[in-house]
Image (cartoon, rainbow over all chains, first blue to last red; front, top):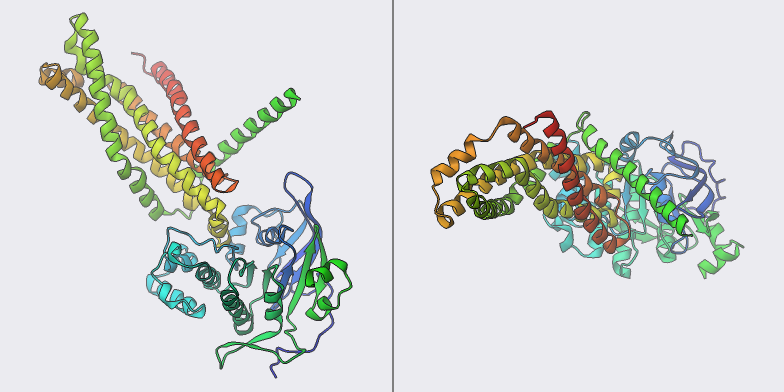
Length: 279
Length: 259
């Protein structure tokens, strides 16, 4: 049995993880109206994968953008890589953001650039040599299984391929944190499974901490009860009743964080909304 | 209720002006500190400058031609058809070359900047750029503003030249007057203050075109419909501002260099 798989452990106390990569404290956000959410507190620890669940429109994507300072909170603090970024000037945020990777909902690839230039965008801006960029881009494209797209442009890619290129772009700089914004939204089940397999591979092979937003329970459960087998080079299910201890859940509803815990606690939660969501 | 609406609208206008002023200032201040994206600067110079050459040549040539036609008819009544060259060259160099080029480039490039950046905003490409640690103001806005200023200056010189050539064409082939006399009058009466006036204006217009195009593009909201709104606002506001600034700059330069 893999050491990744353990029976249900006790849930950590929200926001108490030491050395957290990201820590949110009493976060509130509003856009010209009542708060989108208030009092949000949680953290993401090293090598931890957190899955943020919630109905559409509840503010999950907003929360991801807050974490890397693309939006500003109304109140509370966001600590990213040990630095409070909630009031940090934009110019000081760029180096911090470069240490994180974000996969946007629709990929957000640059239409006018080739796949090679999209994936190697950060390296291009840093003035890395062309040979080095080509090598690292090919490596990342191989990781996401899209070697043949090197010279193509985003408009000629399918929705699933765009997401995988976006994942390759987020990974090329070996980020210390990855944020996935609904990476399987709007995709067919087969393509969704390919994306989830990539996320599991990233989690188990490179051990990068991540926060994944989704409203698809099936994807969340697959992440929790599968592991990546390097020998078979594919994702395999964990034995019945076991799940990845570093993959835990958060749930947002009506502007509040209503759940923070493990899969075991999620499925046994007595919260009315959690039960309805699971059913 | 009506006063509330007026009050809200007035506040929106003041806020927009404040945001635009900060935006336009930052676009230039970015030149002081690295990184400066020289490759993007060259690419934008090609798009804005080289791409606009055909429309600037055509509009300059035909404007010069129309000026020669109209002025010749009026000047003939006073027996002064001989000064057609002077009239065309002074009008083109001091005024029409810069304004026409500004309006033409505004229609072509302020719209393209607003729609391109607006599309990038609504498809989260701008957010993706920021998330990748790259400042969109430095990467997208500053190269467009600087390229626009330099290219508009060069395009105005081209428009002036072809305007005078257009006037010569009409003078020689339609009005059957002496071409040498036309060019002699066109050249002889041009003074340095006229040329300075003609070259200061495109610098202001280039800044207006790019800063307004980028400003409306970067504050786009509301999906593809919002991109359309931004494009219209960019073209309308930059065109109106070009004419308003032309009046102010002309007034200022005539005060500095009285004729």
